[in-house]
Length: 152
Image: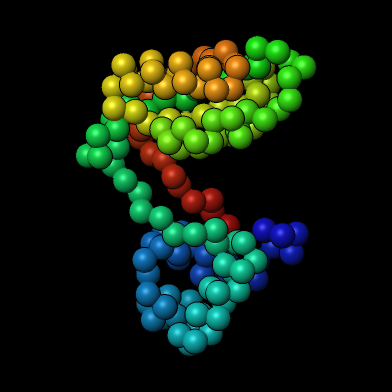
């Protein structure tokens, strides 16, 4: 959000409904929040323009799309004096789903999805070469939940 303060209650309700189901129709949304379809459409458009709603995506099952192995990779610079441009150096690597700048010993933590342990090994090599970093990897065994929307 661009510093515009907390959301109005109706906008909060719209955002929560869309977070639960981004494919919800304007008609359904209007019924759920008690506004007209045109008012909901206007509010959703404004929320998109303000950057509250960043987009709409499909959540995919890694197993079914051939990427069953999920891992978290922590990056630590080899040279602490080097410029902090690691995200730019690795953004072309498609197996990286998310990149988080973090406080602590590491500089960044990556969420990655790959097809196999061999694929992870290759990915680690490519990350180390591209970013000139050392890595520490945690392999995910199972995912009880993920991608939950914050409660407003």
